Each structure stands twice: as C-alpha cells, then as structure tokens.
Image (cartoon, rainbow, N blue to C red; front, side, top):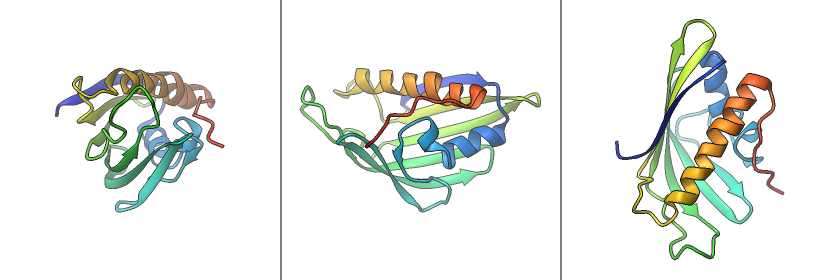
Length: 148
C-alpha cells in the first residue's frame, strides 16, 4: 500500500482501541462525526466546512477496520484541489502486545507526497493519532476538532 503510515503502541487493549475507532470518533477526531460501527455504513466527519463521507468497508472486531473515502471536500484556499481524499482508503490494523497494550498500524492509502494537501494532512493525522487518539485511550481525554 502506498500512502501515509504510522505504527505505534498504545497502553490500551485491542478492544478499547477498536471501540474508539468505530464508536468513539467524537472523542478523538471530530465532534462532527457519525459512528463507524457497521460495515456498509457511510458516516460523515466535519471540520468546519471541510468534510468527508466515509464508507465502512471492513470490520474485524479488535483486529482490523477499513474505510473508503467516498467524498471529500477540503476547505483551504491554498489548495487548488478540494477533493484529493476522494477514492482513498484508510486501514487500521490492531495487534495485542501482551495483555494491556496494542500495536496500531495506520495507513491512509492514497495520501501520497504528490498530493497538494500531503503536508497539511500528514500533520493533521499525526496530531489526531498521537495527541488525541493515543491520549484519549491512555488518559480518557482526547483533543477532537470541536465542530459547531
């Protein structure tokens, strides 16, 4: 898979990580989000005027989550394209490490350096993965985007 990837350990069980990715998105990514807990569901994420419509394409409890970005609009005047995420995929792979930790391998397939938004989007993912998702799972307090 070609794209943006990060692998890291979280002090939380695979079940807790899976629940955060599928049902707890509002606690770490954006308060303007739906649930990603059923295959076939299309949920939205909102960041002000920026939004995604994401289809849940695969769920294997406590092991794997896959999303397909069906529609994307990036509200940023510095970009000439506002739909670069459309058609990309997001993969979450969870592996238990002992009884209390999980190795999370995250890939945004299609988010490549040639995309105009690559720097902005990679910085965003790094923030939401490390500063928000990981922190939410380890301390109970994430830093989701506060959508009105």
